Image (cartoon, one colour):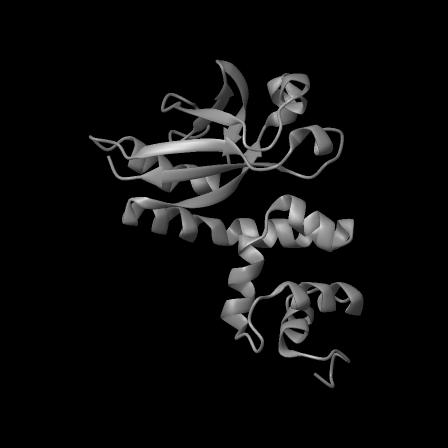
Length: 188
């Protein structure tokens, strides 16, 4: 703690992963529910933060760092939810700007139900999963999440997967932060 000039282990962990602003490290540490977290507990807590929570708690540069680093951990959460048959995971929605339907997405509040449509004939990724709202294409499930999710969706019988918009797209449509969707799996 002396090395980083902060008052607790969680703030030190924040510094060790590349957050070099004391105020941001302290804010993230205060958001951790464990009084004396392990490094793993701190990282797990960060990976559970939504895009909105990250952007509220940190500055834009730190938000980009955290969003990218937590995205790398999400495939594990996806796999755990799929294997257990129940659970929730959040993943980024990719290709929104290229879908041409940003205006439609910008009107959707958080919690809006979304449809996941497998696209195995996609030339770039046979595990591709489209995200749609009432038949309107919005984007793609992030590649790192699509693979384990596609494997599960291709099972017979497939698990029930409910998808919803995790971030209020109306508030971030004009910014560069990734829009995310939440998927909940349940056993058939």
